Length: 114
Image 1 (tube, rainbow, N blue to C red):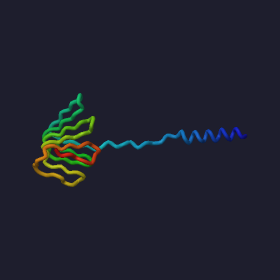
Image 2: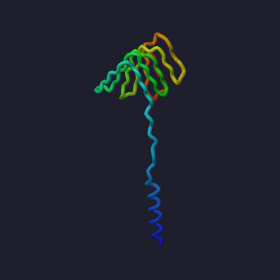
Image 3: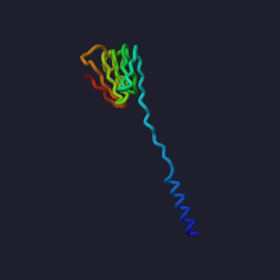
Image 4: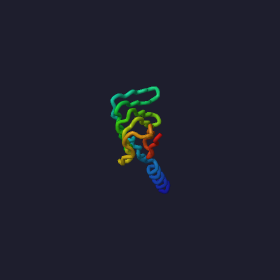
C-alpha cells in the first residue's frame, strides 16, 4: 500500500512539472510603406523606396520623403528628403530644414536626426 501511494505521488508530480507553458510571441512591429518605386536588394536585404515615400509604424510617421531605405536584418529605417515626420502622433517637424536624414530602428522609441 505504501509503495502504491509513493508511485501515485511521483506520477502526479511528474504530470505537474511536465506541462507545457505558453510563451508569448513578440508581435512584429507594424510597418507600412507607400512609394512611387521600390528596389529590393536580396543580397544585402535592403529595400529602397523612392519618390513621395510615406511610412507608418506603431510610433513613427514620415510623409513625402524622397527616399527611405529599410534594412531587413537590423530593422533600421533611413529617410532622406522628408517634408514631415511625427513621433507618437505629435508633429515634430514640418517643412524643409537643416536636418537631412532621419534614422530609426523598429521597436525603439527614439529617432535620430542627422
